[in-house]
Image (tube, rainbow, N blue to C red; front, top):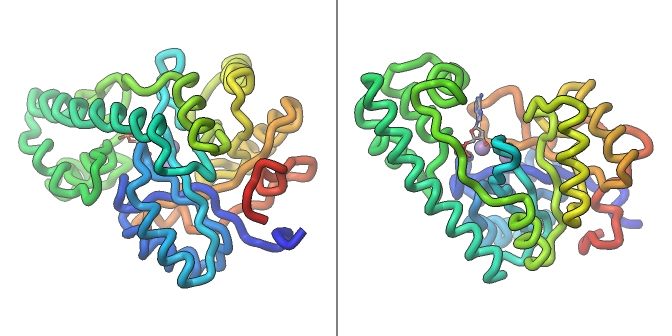
Length: 284
Ligand code: AMP
Ligand code: MN
Ligand code: MN
Ligand code: MN
């Protein structure tokens, strides 16, 4: 197969969601990093795909149309990637629109709560940093750092934006079932993003993977920019045991975060079935 030596990065963000590079800039950066196949997977929007696809074609890179859907599962937020989706699918777009409407309401609610703990102007501040149609906690974090309320994005999350902190608002995202339905109606493959990030017990992780698989989910992101070597081995074991496809992606958000570099990924452990080798993967 001709795809054997291609370099894949199947998880990345642009200014269409909470990344800091434009879709065009992201594709250029991927090209410089030696990536041959890049998936643009913005949170709850496909708005960057047109621009990214056009630049990718000019540079000779394969652009995989993707999305990272916010899902509420058992009082947690989990992220499900759709890869090789058709962005014009009406069911998908209708679903994403509802998630963005929740985001808009949540942004005002986050700001109201921050206001009560003495931080004003956060709604306007966060919105001023958005370049696309979604407002994320990342935008709040960048604003709070700029306004001097914390030294780093990481610190903002820890002090203000996570469960139990003043600016936390419970997610009311898509159901797992709906997210998978939208992805499949759009012709895509569904992948559980960065499964180690949810800090699930082994039992709950098996339950998540089991439900996802029963609903027709295809893959697990085994290698992620946020996974340690141990996480990679654990997720590879789950993928093998459940007969699921394995994916890899940096979850790149821009050059500001030096820990995560585009295309800089560990190899999938032996015994994994790479998602791009599956019959259902359109580009080889
Ligand atoms: P949202 O989807 O708006 O709730 O925001 C989630 C995004 O915030 C994730 O996709 C990450 O990009 C970012 N994020 C979440 N937790 C952290 C953290 N502890 N430090 C930095 N960024 C984070
Ligand atoms: Mn993000
Ligand atoms: Mn994510
Ligand atoms: Mn992501």
